Each structure stands twice: as structure tokens, then as C-alpha cells.
Length: 387
Figure 1 (cartoon, rainbow, N blue to C red):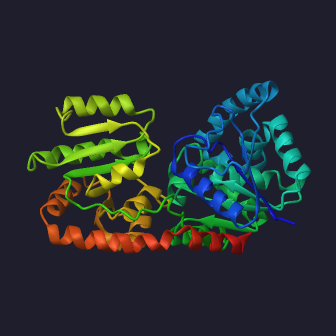
Figure 2: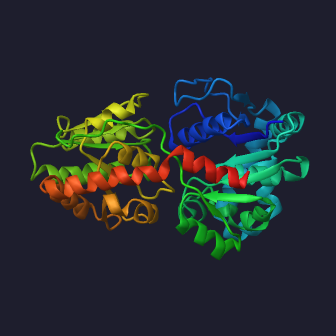
Figure 3: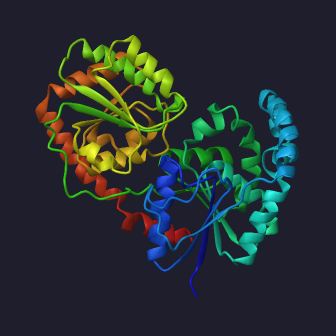
């Protein structure tokens, strides 16, 4: 009998590194003869297998909140705002658990029913919120539960206002998990020091393989991601503006979508960089854009493990990144690392690399070598150890 695995998440049918990672791992497990399910707790997005190539045989269940859930959630939302602002309330685990997780009573019942009726062996909570949700629901399901963190511990438990109030609840519930998967050793260390729990580090896999590599001849930088604050595209534009004063040849493509698109467009216009910086929509053919570029730029404020960096390595692109823990740990051999938020230093790194062909080619070779660490064969073997 096939072992049954279920990923619990918001949706895998929208743009994002989490969605891509879940799809690639789910597909690989299916090919390993697992019976794979995905529960999406929103039906705002229709099933679209073409987005990241989800196998059509993987079972997808949409379970959205009902009307009564939304009414209850409205009142809980008002309490949540108070909890978020009052640090003393962060330690009230029962209150936090109810307002953040238990309040959607009817939706939770449907999730529990689906898991139990399908006799799921392992439920994987995708990202920290859904990790905690499976912990809260654990007493109602017989499945083994696994957490899969996609952001950094620092960003989740210390920076994000809506999440850091969950730190005490995490500390209480984390031992219900059979495994807690994180994306880098720095986060595994943080979990051990703060929650006294031994997390498992499993890298995200590359989402495609490319026999063709960049020839490094195009004078294009590329950056890919959601147009949201944490991705740092605003400061990337500032760095490129400084760079553009000394270099008139290289251009920048930023590919993605998100709430800050108009703000970024206005910034580009105000700096008179419309001819040098292009904001392009997300694409299912992202590989083509990597191959038309020569350097990948990562301006994020934090990253658990940026899949875009794995993709860049696969296409043979050198990387310029701020010195994030994940970049230092996993991409230091093929990157130029800049002190975080040193916008001028980032611009200098861009200028130095475009003017140093020998270093550019050396980093590109190391990027290709580094990409082998993220093969799906290696990553799914690690996943099978925790399932």
C-alpha cells in the first residue's frame, strides 16, 4: 500500500518560492510511489498545473473558510490586533491559539475530516503558520505531523508583527512534530537555542535543470521575486541608480508581481531609469530570462533559501547578494556578498563584477557546481528520511 502524504498550505497556484518548492517535492514523492495530496485553504486560485508543472495525478482539495468562520474570524481579528501590540499577551497560549488557529472552526473540521477519511499517514504543514495549525489540530488527527519552515527564524519570530506573537505557542507545541524541516543550518541552530528542539535542515530543490548555461555575454542583470517589501527591490533600484552613473551599458530586469509594483514603477520613473530597468510579469519560461542574463542580483532583507538563487546557479549565473545567513552558508562560493543594507557597497559590487571578466567566469563555474547540491534526487532522499 502506498504511503499517503498531505501538504497543508494556503495555495500552490500562485507565484512564489513556497509554491514552487511544494510542487517540485510533491511531484518527486509521487514518482517515488507515494499517494500525494495537497490541501489548499483558499479557493481564490483555480487549479493550474501549468504554473509549476504539478502532476495531474496529485490530489488537490480546496477547503476555504465558511460564512460562520468569517464572522468568527472578524471578531478574533480585533482581538489579534490587541495581542500583536501587547507583548504580555504573547504568552497567553490558549488565547493566541484560538484567535490565530482555532477560530475557523468549520474550516478546521473539514480539514480534519479530509485527513482522517483519506487515512493520511503524514501531514506536512507548509510554512510556519500551517506548521502551527497542524500542531493545534493534532489531537483530532491520527497522522504523523511535520513542519516545513520557509522563512528565516529571525524574520518570522522576531521581525514580522503578525507572527512574532506566536513564538511562545511554537515553543509549547513544537514537540508534537515528528520533524521540523528548515532550509539552512543557521535556522536549525536558532530553533535549538530558543525551542530546545532539533530541527532537520533540508534544502529546497531546483525547479528545473538546464543543459544550456548563460554565455555571460549579455549586459543584463536579473532579479526575480514578489514585489513586496521583504524582497528589497526598492533598495536594488537605488543601488542600480548609483551603478548607472558609472556604467551606461548594463540593464536590469526584475521579474515578478505584487502589491508594490506601482511604487517600484514610480521610483524607476522618478530616477529616469525607464530605459535601463524593466519590470516584467511573472512567466512560466523563467529559464529563458536567466539565460539572457549574466549576473543574478538578490537584494532581499531575509531569505530562508531563495529558490531563485538555485535557479540562477543552474543557469550558470554569478550572484551578488547581501550577506544573509542562507547566502553565506549555501552560495558563498559563487557570490559576492555585501554587508546588509549597504546600498552603495552593493552598487560597487555590481560595478566591480561587470568590469572583472575573470572573476565573473570563475563565479559562474562555481555556480554550476553548486547547483548539484539542489538536485531533486538528493532532496527527495532527505525528505524520505523524515516521512
